[in-house]
View 1: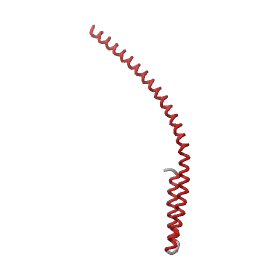
View 2: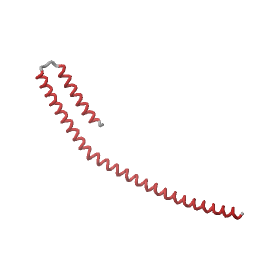
View 3: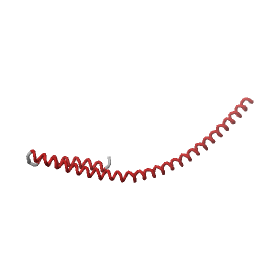
Length: 120
């Protein structure tokens, strides 16, 4: 959860708790209390709309910048991985050739040993 989201949630709960505490502590008639609740709810709604709009604007601004930055970094990583893959692939092919040569050499030596053993 981002710090903006945490802040927004904290703001909502803080405002609601403050409004309830304030209304519960203040001596007033039922009608006055309902009016105060309506006013506080309206204020809270206005605050939330403002915070939501600010947050939406930040997300919109981050969206294009962040996506472009991500694409650039992803492209760099992809190119690096391709280079490393090509290098590793080349090494594997070289090792495979060496192993085939050594295996053929060992087979040839084993055949020579077998022929020498049979002749003795």
